[in-house]
Image (tube, rainbow, N blue to C red; front, side):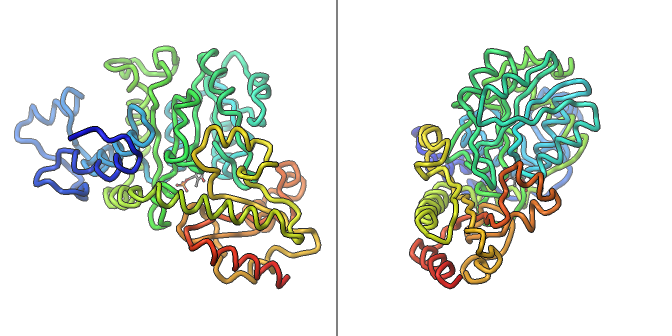
Length: 412
Ligand SMILES: *Cc1c(COP(=O)(O)O)cnc(C)c1O
C-alpha cells in the first residue's frame, strides 16, 4: 500500500491496516474481558512483556490498540494510551510521572477541572505554580530546583489566551524539562504539539476528536521528543527497551492498570468512527467561528470579542503561524446594559449547554455557571466579565448561524 500523507487519508485508511482477520474495514468491537492462549507459555510471555498480546481488558483490547495507533498517527508521535475521559488521562499522567516533592509549572488559564485536579496534586505534596503562560518569561521565573514539568493548553477557554508555545518548548528543551500540552481545543488536525517540542500531549477525545457529543474518552501521547533517560521518576522496572516508551509504559502500568480509568471498546469504536471526519468538521466549525467573530466584533451591542482569528487578538500572529485554523471556541462580552441570558434565550438555534466540540452550536453565560463558584473577585482576575458568553461553534450552515445571532442581538 502506498504511503499517504494527508491527515484524513491516513485516518480513514487506518483501521484496515491493523491486521484484523477477515479484513474488516472498521476495527471490530472486542468485548471480551479475558484473552486466552493455546499454551500457558503464551500467556506467560504476554505477562512478562516478551510477546505482544492482550491479557485483560482493563489494560488493552485490539479495539483500544487500533484507536491508540490512530491517535499516534494523528499526532505524528511514537505511542498513545487511551482512558475513559480526558480527566482520567490527565490524572493518570500526573500521578504516574510526578511524586511528592516535585514541582510542576502550569498555566493559570486552564480548563476548570484541570485546575481543580492540580490543586489535588498539591494535597499529595506536589508543588504547583500557576503562571501566565502567554509570557514565557513568567514560566522561566517560576523554575525551582525540583521542577520537572511545564503544563499548558494551546488555546485556553473561555478567554482564548494562547500560551507562548514555541518559546516555552525551546526553554524546556534547554532545561531538560518535560513540556506537556493539552491539545484538546486545537485537536491534532489544527496542531501537533510535537512541532513546539512538547514531549507529552493530552487530547480529550470527548471533544473535537470524536466530535459528536456522544462518547467520552481521553488520550496521553508521547511525541518521542523527550529523552526519558533524563527523567528521575521512571521506575527501574520500566527502564528497559526503547527509551521513548518508558514514560508511557509507566503511565499504562501505574495509572491505567492500577487506577483503572479504562476506555471501553465500544467507546473506542465510536471515537474512531467520529475521528474520520475530524478535518471536515473542524474546517467547517472554524470557518463558522471566524464569520461569527467578525459579526460580533462589528455589532454595537457587543463590547468585546475573544477569538484568535481577529487581528486585534494579542496572540493572533502566533495562532496564524502555529495552527491550521483559529479554532471554534469564541467568547464575547455584551455591553453592560444587556443581559447575556436574555440574548441566549433569543437565539433558538443555539443550545444552552456546556461542553465543547459538538456538531451543534452550544453557548452559555460564564459568570453565572462555570465560574459562579469562584466568586466575583477571582472572576475579575481571570478576565471573566459579568456578561461574558462562551460559544462552542458547530457545523450548522454559516448563513443560519449568522442570521440567528444577528436576529437575537437586534431583538435585545
Ligand atoms: C473537556 C476538556 C478536558 C477534560 O476532558 P473530559 O473528556 O471531559 O474529561 C480537559 N482539557 C480541556 C481543554 C477540555 O476542554
